[in-house]
Length: 269
Ligand SMILES: NC(=O)c1ccc[n+]([C@@H]2O[C@H](COP(=O)([O-])OP(=O)(O)OC[C@H]3O[C@@H](n4cnc5c(N)ncnc54)[C@H](OP(=O)(O)O)[C@@H]3O)[C@@H](O)[C@H]2O)c1
Image (tube, rainbow, N blue to C red; front, side):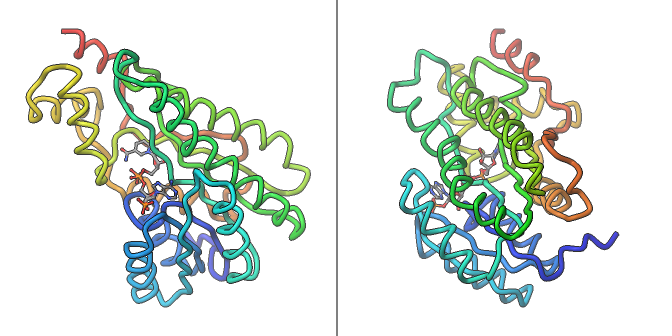
């Protein structure tokens, strides 16, 4: 299927590593010019150069810490200037500490909402007026299945995700009349740099050896394995396509059918 993405432009947050890098690469392979941001300039510039080399597209690295409003504004404005327009906004940079309520400090809760929720709000606040002015646009928010499949062990990511999902659906209701459509992609566990950290926290909280904790999360997934970055990126690229514009205010899980309740039961053994 021809996705009709050739010649489009996109902003992707957290595009230097993990899922965001996979998305930027996937979009560029379909002919999209992309601006990416992350805090560390080195890995960001390396990612941009590698994606540009492979795809022959314009990839613009713009350092930004999205916990900071001025950086979010600068990312959107500079990206817009460099690309000429913004057809697609992918909000992806976000993480929240896992763990049970007893292990989460005030600072952990604050951090969860600062990046994973407010980082998305900030970029949207600056990109939506641009999309309104150009007559339309597409927003894909990378959120997480914790928001719709709660688990007590992931209570902080769950809260931040639920907020992001609510935001996605609310804005879909408001901005349809400007020809801007929104959707959320909700991954379960994905093989990224962060996976080892999540397993380590699980092993600490459950007092299990690391290797045993590593087997526990996939055991709650009917397909028996965690997702690869490309599997999430492929879905995002497809949803970013103009063919999918009508898929508005919709959330799609990409988690192999994970049953969080089973994970909680296993933890309670
Ligand atoms: N991996 C999973 O298993 C999983 C599961 C469910 C949902 N998700 C969601 O999918 C998205 C991507 O996950 P991921 O694991 O690939 O990403 P991640 O490890 O959280 O983020 C990696 C990217 O985000 C950048 N980043 C981190 N903090 C930032 C900040 N304050 N401002 C700007 N950029 C920042 C990183 O670069 P710097 O460090 O240089 O800033 C890097 O480019 C996230 O929203 C995550 O919540 C992931």
